[in-house]
Image (cartoon, rainbow, N blue to C red; front, top):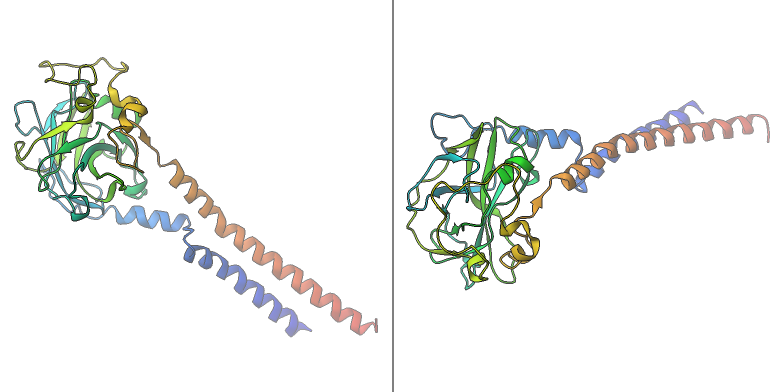
Length: 308
């Protein structure tokens, strides 16, 4: 009888231990897995940082760098958070993938909030521009307009929390295709007070091609022309075309986030929370099985001794 109880207990214990592994194999990662992914991001950056700054993370999907340009088609590496627009043009050094070398290919600038122990794909962020059509497949680019938002749109919504950094990404899209979010050029900015400084970025030529914003193509009021020198927007002020999902969606790749919309990591966090609780629950179920089976075996043994 004791051997039977021990055998049943061992079987239940194996079930309890195997359950979390089976859940993980099915794609439900626990807290330890999420922490591991976060730790991986702390490896040395793929690209050399500027000004001797040491990047605390590395984005595994970053394939190249972004160059930021002013209205005189000159590269810039610092500026004010309240300048409208944030920059005038953004140029990538990552060539357009073959699948996107079609008529109507677009580029859209997004910004993200790096977070420790969180995969880069789950960082929160939002679109800074509407989509732009560009001319040179070798250098995708975004053209901003006078009605685009300052960088405070990002920093107010998602304050930088990891070494005061935010990451810019250039996502490409094409008609009837999803946005390419698995390979992109990026740049990193460090926020200090009301200014930003590029700590990781590119050196592409600001005149590597031409681009036009959907805001201009749609004839949106104020979108044409260049911004006035020193144009700024007061903190807390609202406006700008891509705060409207309707107008932004007109230039957004299908099945991709609309320009001006926010991208939240809450869904990923919810998944991680559910996964984190799955392992303890599985262990609890396994232990319950141990108790029930052991008690049943003991009860049957006693009935046989009593001759019932």
